[in-house]
Length: 263
Image (cartoon, rainbow, N blue to C red; front, side, top):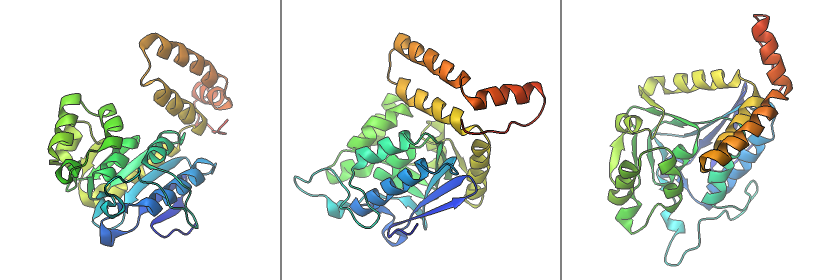
């Protein structure tokens, strides 16, 4: 597929989406959001794709929303439509990432700020170059990171996350790892290899069970304990009813590698 502001490629079981406006630090403007939504939809419905990696071109992952598209009384950022764009907002983008049904990995090649950090925390895993910086500087220009407010506290403790939002301070990759904002920080030269290793490992698992597991995780994360347990009980039945579950158990007993069908 050919896009104007991102690239989309499939390498084995992995779909790689790259924010591709390095000269402007990969801003998340309306057209970019629309292209991301289209690419995520393509990955969701492509049976050959088992894992999705999101990264940025150049030295920055993403500096966040395109401030030139915002202003006094501006509506929430939305796609303007286009050859590959579908109308949508940052809300749609966050939901698309959590409803993909396939593991998502943020490959944080450089600074992830504002909406760029929002993309990182919306992914299931995040591996970052050790020289990357993270932050929500919106407060410094009279804004508040509203969308990140809904996602950051699903990753980090309340007081530490709120300090980031209130101060606009930037933190290092090591600090981000320590507070749980990212999965881990690695030397920059080893970033792609670390991401590829994780993607390969996830791609070797049953896509059907990963889909059911991720759906259960996101569905129950805000439930009270009893409703969550009741829902998960039903989902366990759904897992045990899959062909992949039966294959996995048979392979274990027969001491062989499973042959996943994705069913």
